[in-house]
Image (spheres, rainbow, N blue to C red):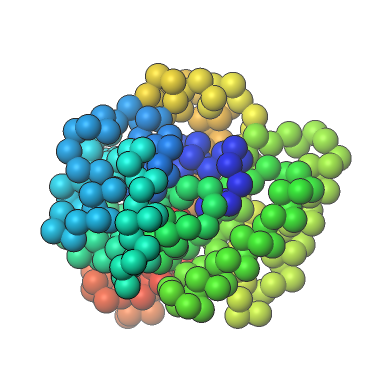
Length: 289
C-alpha cells in the first residue's frame, strides 16, 4: 500500500507474488486498482469472466469465479476500468468496506498467500483491501518526501485497525528503485530503520515493522516487462530486478515458515494446524498485503 502513485507498488505486488509462487507456494493476487496495472502486468484478459468489480458489487459471485490462472501456482482476480465506479456504487451500502474480506473468507480456496494491489489514495477500494488484509507492506523510494509520507500511511493503518480491522499490522517497507550509493538514500534508510526500532513494544500496528532486505535496485527490465504481459521472472529471470524480488520473496516465505514452525512447537508437536490456529497465526504475523 502507498497513497502515492509511481513508487513501485504494483511492480512489487506482481513480482513478489510471482516470486513466492516460484518457490512452490500457491498465491492469489487481487487487483484493486481501477487502472488495472497488475492485471495488465501478468497478461490477464480483463474480459475473460467476472472481475473484482463484480465480486464487490454482486454477493452472489464467489471468489473462485473471478480467478484467472497466471500459472500453476499463481492466480489473479483481475480489475477493469469500471472498478472506478465501485467507489460511488458502494457508498450507500452499510457493508461497503467489508465486501472483499467477506468474499475471501467465504472462499474454500487453498492459497497460502493473498496479495492485494491497492489503488493510490484512500477510498472505498483501499479500505476494502485493508479490511481484508492481515498485514501491510509499504513500497517506497528512499527520498525525504517519501519518508514524510510514511507517517501519514501509518496513521491511516492505525485508524483502520481501530475502526475496521483489529488484526491489521504493518509488516514493513520495501525500498524500490533504490540507489544505495547516494548519501541521501543511506540517510533516509537509516532514519526509517531507527524509527521502526524505536517503536518496539509500543503496541502500535507498526511495532514489529522493519525495512525489508534486499532493497529493489533501479532496473530497466522491471519497467519493460509489463508491456509484454510478463513478470520479471518470465521476462528477464536473471536481471537485477529479478534477483532482488526473488530474494525478497524468499525472505517473506522464510518468515512465514518460521512463524508456522513456532506455532507448531507451541502446540506440542502435532503435525497439522487447525483452521482456527492458522487464522490466529495470520492475525499475528502473516507477511502479506
